[in-house]
Length: 126
Image 1 (cartoon, rainbow, N blue to C red):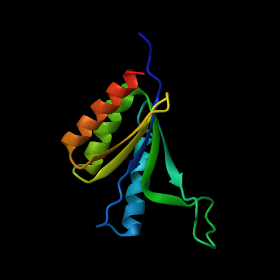
Image 2 (tube, one colour):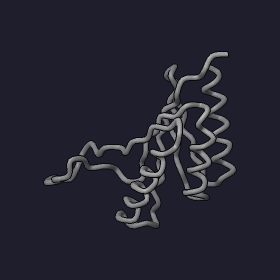
Image 3 (cartoon, rainbow, N blue to C red):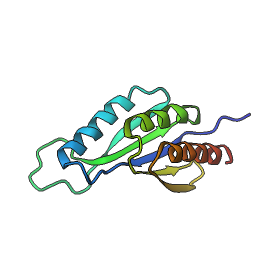
Image 4 (spheres, helix red, strand yellow):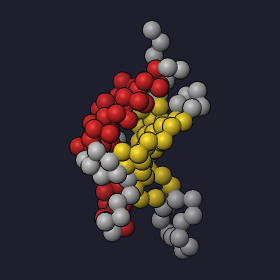
């Protein structure tokens, strides 16, 4: 049996009910916590158009995280996301090693579990 290559995931979880400051704090907290998950490499998404005069070394978009994850670690990652974001709307874009891409929108733990299974199934059908 061959081992499926990693999957690139982009999570978008922008909450219109949160202020930009709270959304940034949520993004930063999730990023820091996800970095400790085994089999997951996570990065913030750089702002391609930072505000003029921005002196920070890097401006990041809030509500967006990119992860490269092994198929074996999908369950841990999706469990983590479900625990932290619960029933909030999340957009997930998955890019597979063979170039295929899918975009899913979920707003419940059940839909998140179904998205995990879909991504797992597609990653193993390459």
